[in-house]
Image (cartoon, rainbow, N blue to C red; front, side, top):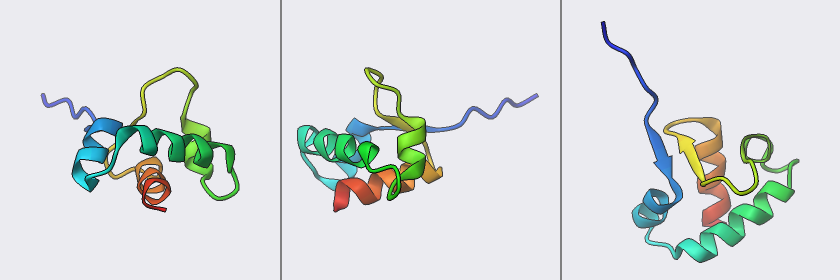
Length: 70
């Protein structure tokens, strides 16, 4: 019996991978969450005062990467 738990990617891992400053990334993500038309998954998934994390390969992770890179 194998239980497949989804792999989680955190903001810290994302920043390390993209070689970006975590503080700047958080600011960009907060702005993206407010823009629900451009980043609907991100806006729907994030709850205030919770860690930034996504299931690897999810639509939310893809939107987070796009928001951070912009």
